[in-house]
Amino acid sequence: MKELKEIIPHLLALGGRSKKELLQYMLKSLWTDIVGDKLSHISQPTTLEDGCLTIELSDADWLPTLQEMKHLIRKKINDYLQKDYITSLSFKLNPHLRPSGPPERNRPLPPEPEELSPQMKEIVARIPDQELRAIFSQTVRKYLALTKKSPS
Image (spheres, rainbow, N blue to C red):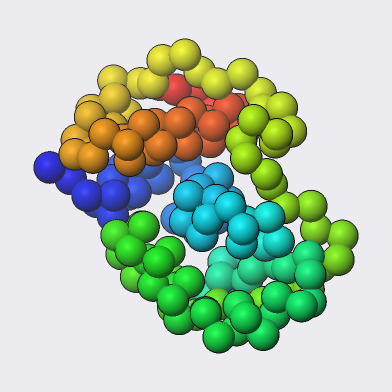
């Protein structure tokens, strides 16, 4: 059985994107799952440079709290990704930020491919946890739709 950290290189080869782009997209897509509803409504990951993830905040009142929690947040992100991709966090105030709500309230996405390529199906099938497998499969489909890549 392969872990998420072992699957990411396969996705990079199939999707033609850099590890940084893939990780940024995954973090944005899965932000609510990683940090929960409350934090996802006031924050959003934006950029990843040399292991430092920048998180934008819509409300300055949350900055002290998140500064205190940054080691916990970083650990939670890395635990979710099953590898220490994130070495540090920085926070940036953006009063114009419109954090994403639950998926049903997000802006409409382009149609997702109905089928994944055989290689991608094999990778997804190797994820042992059913819930994680479903989330990962949905993320791959969204990634392919947003980048207008065909599934094969």
